[in-house]
Image (tube, rainbow, N blue to C red; front, side):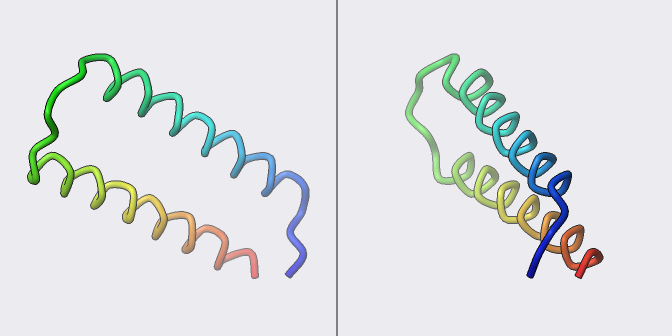
Length: 60
C-alpha cells in the first residue's frame, strides 16, 4: 500500500505529540501505577489505534 506523504507526516506528528503528552502528563508525578490506571491507559491507546485504523482504512 502506498500512502501519500501527508498521511505519513500527520501520523508521525500525532505519534510524537502523543509520546510528548504521555511524558508530560504521566511522567510529571512519579507514583505507583494501579491496575485501574494501567487499564485505562491501555484502553485509551487501543482506542487511538482503532481510530488510526479507521482513518487509514478510509484511504485504502
